Length: 414
Length: 172
Ligand code: SF4
Image (cartoon, rainbow over all chains, first blue to last red; front, side, top):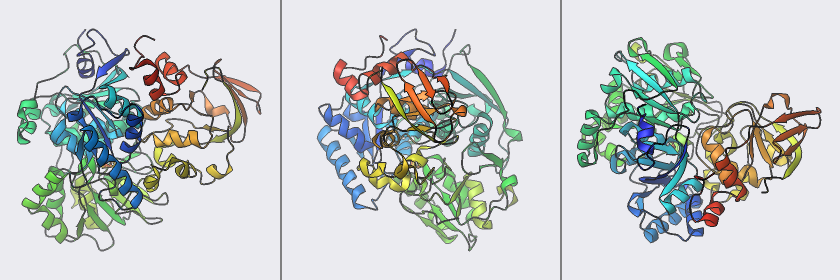
């Protein structure tokens, strides 16, 4: 029998192991952020304060960046001091969101990546096995260079057809989560394939891989192919590329088939990500805030989509429009292309690259009874800082179009 | 904790999809380095009165997909710190489950439909039995995988690592 992508990556040093077996694997990249890192550091200190692989141990200061409170500033000090003492890498407040930074600078196809952040699965878009864990697991991974895991069974998602105008990767993953359910893929890996996936550029793959955890999955994986090579080359990292795909006779627990030509713009209504509807069904929900950003949808390609819709127009007077580039690189590129100007002229406020708005730590916290449509990945009660507010999720196109309308609209209507 | 421990307490019942945002909300992010303070708010967004009304030893009983969402380990830590003796649910989200074991919080998968708010429970971890004393019924819970039993009985992942000098779950 052939191997799935997860089996290939997790058995590099455990030849012969298969889905369902527990393996101890060598970790290529271990990461934490400012919310989870201090707790990891506390435990690493308890174990002697050394990390096994400083060049691939990375701390990201992104969740509260720049710090809105002294307690968090102190946590940042802890991280900076530990990075300096241990030789671990530091991605400070100006650099951007953990997962975007990981794919830009640290992760290569075939890597085993563990991060103290649930959306670590995004790096699976590059053909890595990447999964989120808690601070303690990450502490042990950083100290020992290893972690344990059960090799997951895999659901294969075969995607065919072409996206229709106004429909994109975010709509696809929302649709899939609605279909599988928020716990439908618990402990499983989702592996994407099919003709539409081979044609899909990296940003779209990353958006999809990012949200696989919202179906409960342990990892979401894409093949590493020519598109991956070109993406890495565009970052000056072509040397990190290797081809990687599942064997044609790999064994899958389940197969889902999706035809893009029938896919419509989707939203996830509160309070769970699997509570999906078409944007047309949700149309008319009045909005107080629209957020375009996060590790899911804060890349240059996504800002281009939003700017194109907003260019020369003005957001609705009743909504606040907040845009967050996912990283410094994205921010610079958006500035060079004039996108920031387009967005600000349309009434947007641009924040520094980071997580604050998405996770309800600072910036864009909702008031009681308010409703936000975000391009982020979670709509749980309290997610954007207020349990008495509501969050809808949608694509950059749906968000931009809805910001113009002041309510949720199908972006194909604008 | 000892694997043979018996736990007694009252039930605090919650519904499906209790997320780590319900348990340890993002707006309390600044308390992540002050867990005793954060524990005073545990599960606040699912039941604002839970933290003030629960007693040490009580059980948190959820339904489907308990602990979904963020990887924040602060969630199981503050449940434990508040004095909750175990979390029971029909199913758990993956990262929460693993985190709970790593920090020594027992998480038990069983059919919680028959358990109601305020019921008295007796849990025998060694025997794998939950007794609902109020209802006079017994439920069994799914045994933990041996790797996790080893980590839990070693006192959590850090103590496990200290004891064995490595991750030692490959020989169980
Ligand atoms: S942008 Fe949001 S989902 Fe992504 S890492 Fe930051 S807080 Fe998490």
